[in-house]
Image (cartoon, rainbow, N blue to C red; front, side, top):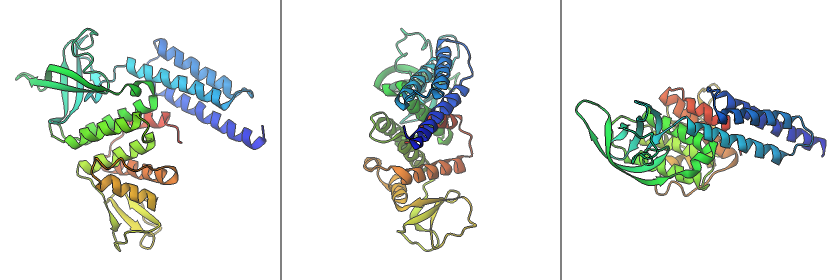
Length: 328
């Protein structure tokens, strides 16, 4: 193998090794078979990284095994999101409280009695990232909703087999809970969430594009739509390069931008067009484009910075997503 290829190969192996260590570092519980298997996988990755006969495909396969083990660990820790969208809290040994994103009531909490029992009639309907239809009621003595009837509409099975999908879905859930107003009807957010899970799990969009699109559209739907129609100073609509102002949600063309301006992120025209599409297109038409390469990187950075600037929140699930995401 040429020296240049060997160097690139070692860099790739080091990348997988570092991500494996980051993934393991997110796990606090040191008990259980799954955790033990993950430690073994990381050890194998270390050994393989120093073996000159190790192929890139063998290393990638071992890392994928670690991803599957991490997904299994997450399932064992009972992350329940209801549609279901956020972590479940055990009220009693077999009961749980789930956070649900609903069409009529927005983000709400539901107390599910006996849901941890496999034979419970609500067990499947209240599972992790399950799209279900609920008939709810609320007693006078509690602010929590309870289930009278429930039926499963759809289960996104691929989320549980790919830790990157699962990590992004968890981040999306945390983001929704942070920006949504309790008991506030917002059907667009539910539709956006379900459509994004579909685009991700079917492979129609890359994970990076799903993340960026969800971040921007969610903020638009909650009242933080940026002004992308033209440069905020000269109204120029089309330039090869613009700069996005994350604080004010505006763009500036290269003629008006000053080097001392802070909080601005560069975006070539394809990234700007994607931003405009995400912000202004109807949801039914929003998924009719695609983006790759440098414009996708620019779009992703802008959308994430825009979210962090306007929510002022430390998303632990975002850290976890970054630890398992592999740039394409």
